[in-house]
Amino acid sequence: MNCNLKVRRRLAVSIANPKKELDVIKIIGTGLIAVIIILILKQYRPEFAIYVSIGAGVLIFALIAGKLLGIIEILQNLANKASVNNEFIVLLIKITGIAILTEFAASICKDSGESAIASKIDFGGKVVIMSLSIPILSSLLQTIINILP
Image 1 (cartoon, rainbow, N blue to C red):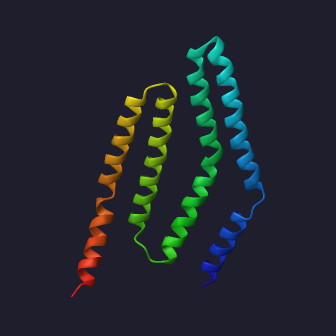
Image 2: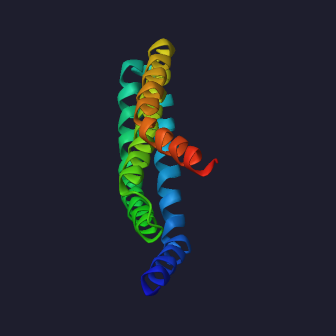
Image 3: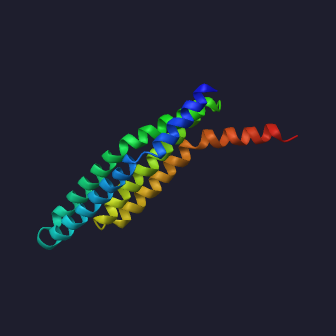
């Protein structure tokens, strides 16, 4: 019970942390500065605009990476407390990571005018996500079968 209380307090502190507001300002500022640079570059050297876009995306991802690790830790703690199979939590984290990365890559492709490649990346990500979700779906179906008379 004491560990559960610690997790709740940690979650409440991390949610109410005023530094998180500053993180949002950093992310928004990075994005807006990148857009301004891209707009200027497109007038004079449009071939370099994609590099600024990729760099801004990587920088924004670096700003949120620590937050993602915190979320993963909290999810694992909650799963341990709820006696959920740790294998399923790992799969859900992988699925979420794949969704984020494929969206990031597809957005870069769309920004560079390659929407056909972006749609292929989206489709590939969805297929990989579906293949990773099979153990979770089969466990869910097995649980439903066991509950039914």
